[in-house]
Image (cartoon, rainbow, N blue to C red; front, side, top):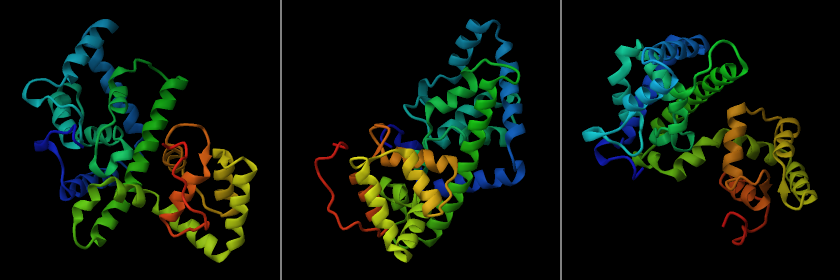
Length: 278
């Protein structure tokens, strides 16, 4: 948040307003697969107008550069909209298409602050493949999944915001977001374990069979097949990031225990202070 200039920072009302813009746009575009391809093709045509690939790269870099009074260290929805409006007409993008680009470029770890993940944004402009190759299909499918995830999370955030009493700016904190982001999964787990306590014992035993370092596959298989909790692909990816912050390709029991305590799931074991997360 500190990398966003004070004049550009969003309060909770601003965030909710932008999330409603996302949902309004979703109502109009519905399934955006074709829109994503249309946008990408418009950008390709625009880039070709600058010449060869080297000229295109230099021109796009200049067009997207942040300099002068509008220079930013980190984009959020507000500043990226302003940047996109500078090139919207020459690229030939509609307002909905600009919204689609922006909301498929957000950092979901900071979705509550609507911060942009630079790498996701620049993919729209830096990739030069054409046709229906595997790379293009992967790009389109990835952006499609990000969009649908953003829509679902926006609905949840708006509902949670409406129920808040007291300081609504708490919505902008990491503690609030990380809890709400996984609330659906956490509460479903809580209900399953409350109804069948033996399942909690089974999961603890599963961790022990792998020296308290459970593979992603085994955890998600347990959730889906034993607890009957179906996760979307983006939910699995988000959970991996939350439970394996160091990217070790496994989930430590201590980290999972901490996660579960936040949703009232108690293994009856204290949290360790000397785990790998340090």
